[in-house]
Amino acid sequence: MKTLRCQMNEVEDQTAKVTVEEQMLITTINSMENDLVSAKSDTKLLREEAEKMNKEKGQICAQISAKQRKIASLESDSSTLNQTMELMQQERVSSSKKIAEKRTGSNLTGLEK
Image 1: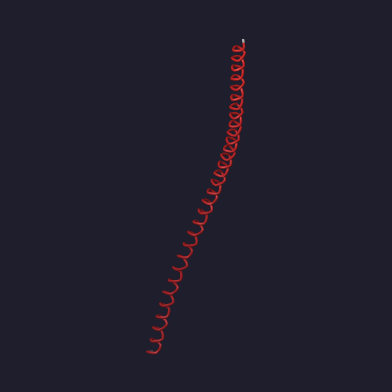
Image 2: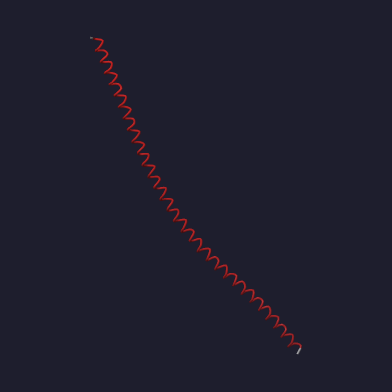
């Protein structure tokens, strides 16, 4: 009888140990499942943020391109204006010389008389 009681106590102890171990495993599994759900949620948020950043990057690149085209256009306009100004200055110098020559010529003509 003592042996049977001793064996029953051992079985009960083993059962208690197995139950505790099983409960620990269940808790670990639940924790891992929660971590997995959280990781999936974080992954989804990161993908959405990445898409948003890519869209913003595209918009910024488009703005940069538009501004580069504007700069190129303004540089071209500036170059054209500089050339026009140089031609006008050359024309002014040429006109001034002609006027000076006419004055000198009319002064000489007046002196010859």
